[in-house]
Length: 279
Image (cartoon, rainbow, N blue to C red; front, top):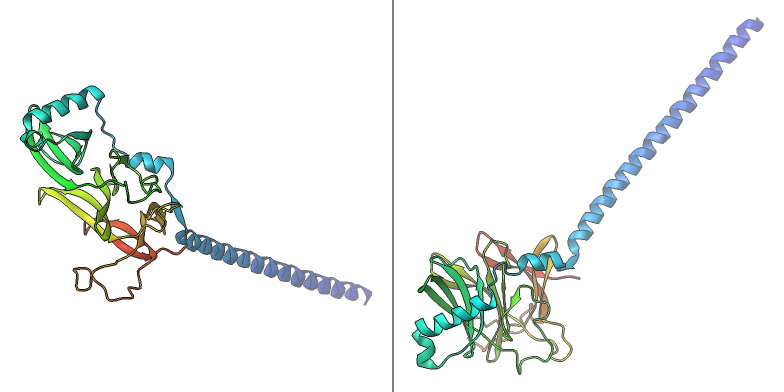
């Protein structure tokens, strides 16, 4: 009888130990699952928060945008003399070259050169040996009288003289484009010009109205950055147009006086607006 009691007691102890172990395993499993779920949630939150952030350009990105083709001073002086001699425009209108550099705009037929004149015009040449194969131009603007704050100081690329323009590979297509602040009387616009092989001309990839917030203390109305995982730039948008004009929007334009973000669309071959930049 005593022996049976011992056996019964042993069975009870085994069952109790088994239940406790099972309960411990369940608690451990539930804890592990909770930790996994928590990690997944935290990772998703981090990813979403990261997409909300914006990042200013680092030195590596700035260097990638800058023109990779440069000419020596001797080559520049020789090209100046060549253009003065072979392009009658300079003699007829007494124009002077104030800036010249070799570049890559995708113009076929020879080496690409960019030239800025004292008439505030930028010319592009494709030159092969001693022959001008192609020639195009766009308007150019000075900053004198526009802003005492240097609104070009954070624009990447290679600055063109004292103009409101810079050139470099802004859309990462292997060719260079021109960024430009355009000052058209009462209307200010951002333009990025690129060479179109089909049209055989420089076309504007964007025409964005902007405003200089403070001509003394800044900030600049344009800043290049990465936002929500996209590379582009923000603009302090201001569409002030004469009533009935081509881009006139009845007041109040809800986009006015907000920071808008733009990025390159390779399919449309233009810069598109993503929306208001939320910091």
